[in-house]
Length: 203
Image 1 (tube, helix red, strand yellow):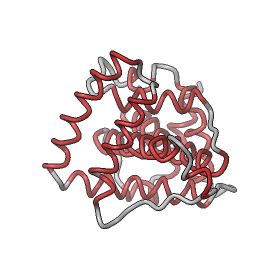
Image 2 (cartoon, rainbow, N blue to C red):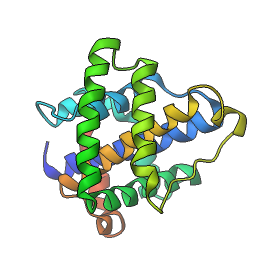
Image 3 (cartoon, rainbow, N blue to C red):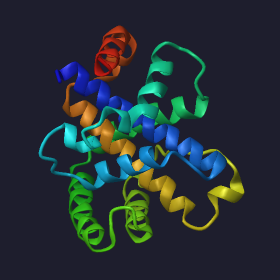
Image 4 (tube, rainbow, N blue to C red):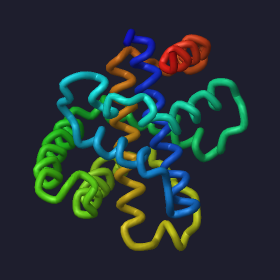
């Protein structure tokens, strides 16, 4: 996998997080494979390879790939998904400038990994801890992501934590995208390159 393909995969992860947040907020449900891929990627802070981050199967990021393709080709895409996706990238840039918060995230994720080893990666206690971590770090920035959806769902048991955990995963993939050479200008000037990379993933 070349650098352009890795950038495309990471960006698909960002838009998969945006898609899952939108689905949870509107319906209370989402694709289980998409959900678990994002959570596991967030917990795996030291993967053996790039491919291990998303479980080695490109189809684990299929909803994100399809959403990103729609954004790049300006096809019909949920305005919320587009807004969440670009907001996650903006939030990532704010985070990169805050060394103290980056260190806090790393330390706290290390503790949550221990929790995941005890309870299981998708256990509600782990999701609650990830959601709490997002709330106490990234959501303290002046720029915040406002999630829109069904108010009764957004206020229901465990839903706030689930949404925040996925927002955290979106920032994780945005950081990965930047580490692989992804830049905001490429989202405008380099759309065709990203689309080529996405297409090559299916070959």
